[in-house]
Image 1 (tube, rainbow, N blue to C red):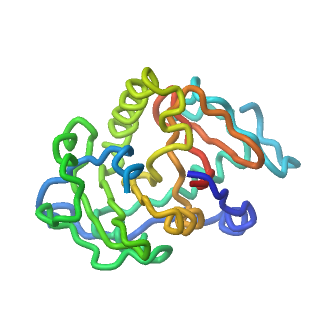
Image 2: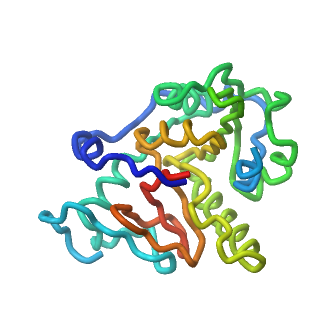
Length: 233
């Protein structure tokens, strides 16, 4: 993913932490298969107040413990990560920024990638959602809850590590756009660009990734991964 969201939009929302009112997850029926990012391919120091752009770090030592070494930009990125509270609310949130028509959380929906449910438990996903975008493809939502997001990131890192053995550039542009408790795959480039204003961040676990231009990164929840604002396809 690449089309960097405008820094000005994020700064204007600096005081806002996105929190979505959702239904109780006891009301959410069905399983939540985890989709692999490859399915989408087929279809720091102290705060620096005078720093206009904070260039992120190469993947490797990122951690979510946040010991106080964040820059102003990184803190802003993490503070504004959206939290849905429920898989249905995650879909409603996406509809603010993308087409996302006919959103469904029915596990029998034929728009899901067939292999998704095989990775449900190991990826920390509890529920799933899907909808149509304007590009004749499907947006897929994976709801982990805040307690499952680290498991999700660990699973994606392991998946990328295996793929990098065959291709060093596997996942070099990142895979999932994530919030605090859900992840999104959107194969259509126009939809990806729309997501750049959603306060979601792109999870990148490729060890060869290096941010360029005005791309910024913030720590992910697992070592070897970063979150970026780079939504270029």
